Length: 178
Image 1 (spheres, rainbow, N blue to C red):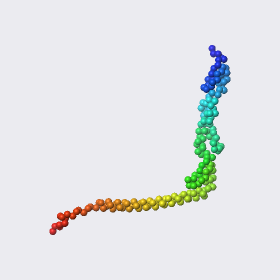
Image 2: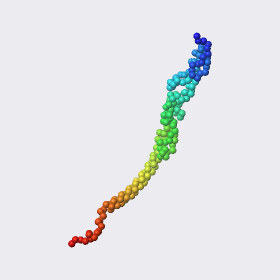
Image 3: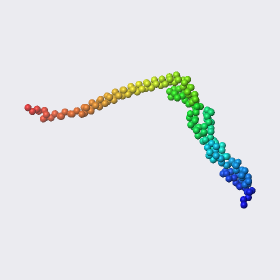
Image 4: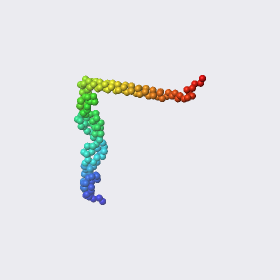
């Protein structure tokens, strides 16, 4: 026979409570060491560690840290941040000289408002590239002439080496038969 007033431990791992059997039935439904399924990801989590779990739960809904008013699952936050309208970015013509930095949502307006300046930046770059192409073409033409001269010279040397040498003059060859 089991004594109803015996002191027993709580059945949940980590709980150190020791209480009488009748009180155990009252304690267990409220024990902070019991586990419940996370309402976001369904992972079993101890009640005592709910806050800790929610801080890392991949399915927990979080707000964008850039205050764009978007809420996404934590696991999708990195993808959102890459295209967040409040993300800071350089103008797409930075490599050509535009110094504008602003939010992604402002880029279209910046491009429309500064199209003349952007056009001038591109014209300048195109002009520089044309000069570089012209200089490279001139250098190539000069190199081609040098190569052609070397090829011609090599051909002449090869032709000279292929000519049959005249037989040496000997005493027999100097006397003609009469």
